Length: 123
Image 1: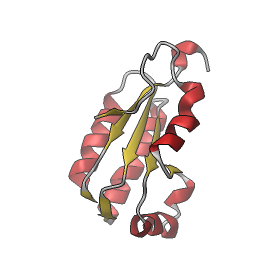
Image 2 (image 1 turned 60 degrees about the vertical axis):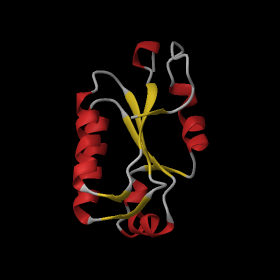
Image 3 (image 1 turned 30 degrees about the horizontal axis):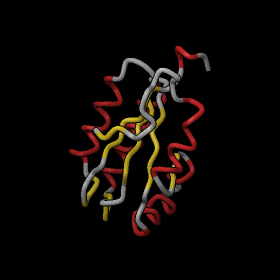
Image 4 (image 1 turned 135 degrees about the vertical axis):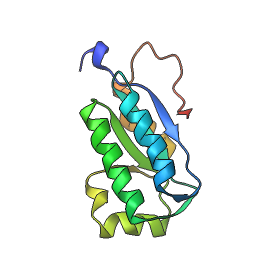
């Protein structure tokens, strides 16, 4: 990956309680509007549940990110939500991390050298 293709500073979404279609539509729209490779992270620490339409929209956002040369990862999955990802085998297609620190360690080599800040930028 050349420096012009490097993934820029992460954009983090922090949904609350239920990861529903409306919240995910916002994420999907942000992913679709990116004009260069970006790393999107979803902090799931406040999410207690996710429904089928929410899962579908999340998969759609992942597909859109990949089509734009971007990455989308999830971190801080609570146990009930993690089980849903495991049952549906979505844990095999999403990048899932335990913590924000693990996300940063995984993407550190891809961050643009022009990026002055190494903290996750909340969206």
